[in-house]
Image (cartoon, rainbow, N blue to C red; front, side, top):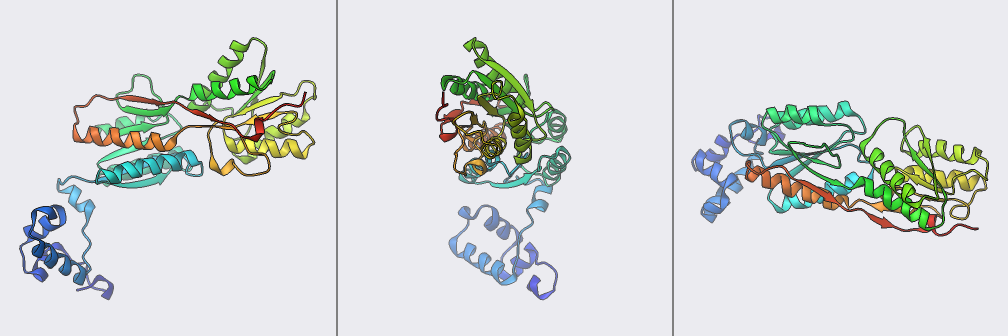
Length: 343
């Protein structure tokens, strides 16, 4: 019997008959082969190969067996931070004998909910969630169904679930302090009109560094989005300003925005880093090209994903473990876009 020949899919009963063993022996070979005799494992595996049998893990979870699948939903896989999170999580999950299924919300909160519902319906063992917006309602719903969730890169004070995140306020503080240390006295912070937690926290960090300096002005520039298009809009706003009032240092919430600003300023005759220093805050590898390389702040997404996976697997092994909050310190990465101002 072979499913590729157009027949029905072979079952475990078919495998048992083909191998000349009991159904329980097939189950043991599939789930606990270390406890079976080698010759029995070889017979069952040979039957599986001949029949083209593939076990149904979803059906297995429905009858009460333990799932070894972890779901990871990220907000935007076009941002390399979330790619790093996925890589870190996958490495740790595989080391612990589990498998990872990754979904991307593509910056759409509705898609995030659909992906979480899919994880819930397929009975994954646990969920890693890297959202952009407040996930409280989704987590409460999943928790009521017995799903354990660990949240990455989003903070909820007093949360009843574990959280792993970067110190985004310190991200902003590092960025502004770096520009001030380079001699900038008029800073601009480029963000978006809506409230996004990482952006809001970075803005607070920038404001703290400005307040400590006591000699620096801060201007907020709101743009359409945190992609290249938003950077073009912000760059044009900067070009249109009186050169005597134009910010000489620009902190962008996102690297893609900063990259676009550099290109717009250069095309308009304002050299970076000669007249204006520009930097990003999210270490997005997609924004690292071009003749002027972008200074940024590393958020160590691989560590975030790995630590989150470790916490989730430990909580699944011991459901009585209390929730924990792990904060990762960011790191400044200096490149040519903040080399020096021409005074």
